[in-house]
View 1 (cartoon, rainbow, N blue to C red):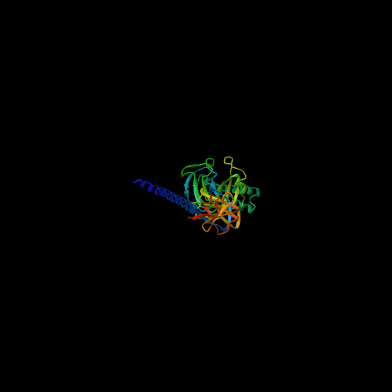
View 2: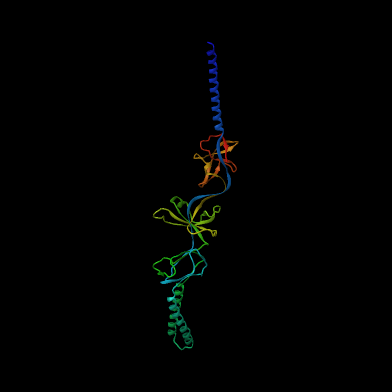
Length: 339
């Protein structure tokens, strides 16, 4: 009975030592496994024509619009169109009351008959030239007055476009001083994207630069255009400069004041090696994957956008560059590629 405790002690010591060794081995294996399974995402370096520049937002607007404001007073007698209607040049839009028109037409017709009668007498030397010229002048004035009254009473579309505003209703009185426009028409064939540029972007932008506009209605379509106007003075409130981009493609989906994302191409490189911007670290290094290991590369970069960077040296087209999980990597570090 006295020897039993002596046998237990070596067994306890062996168990403790062996158990600790196994725990340490498992811990080391866990650390090794963690290092070997560093998860990363990759992207392929591609060769393409690369455009870098300014990314901003703005609004789609019609480049051609007309505010129709008749020059005479009158009551709205008849409206032939509604807001949203598409019209052609020459279509009758609305009519004002025709009192002025009737008076102008009667005066014109009277003087026209008198003019032709006096013309016959003048050819037969029955009246002198001065008398005939006075009659002719009165006739020409009456003709212009009638045409003026007709133009400002029977309002017609001056362009092809879309009716976006009709300011009054039938029966209401119109006076030129009360409204800047009775009817507004926008052209649908010539659209532009309008944005505001910061001081920095203003200094980089020039008339004629290529640009694209994107709208949510056409998520996969970049509408091609060019910079047509840059304001020479800053807005007094925002300190930004108005910039307009003519959209060269006709598209029936575009609408006035529609939100758009704009890209102005300020730099261009043909046949460049391009990688996602996330692949380039602050110290101008990047990591490519070779045999499931991260290989460190010193890179020289060129032009860039918010999402991509031109690589002049250090990475070749076809290289698999790490774009996620590259922070904190060291050369030859084991990695695991995830989708």
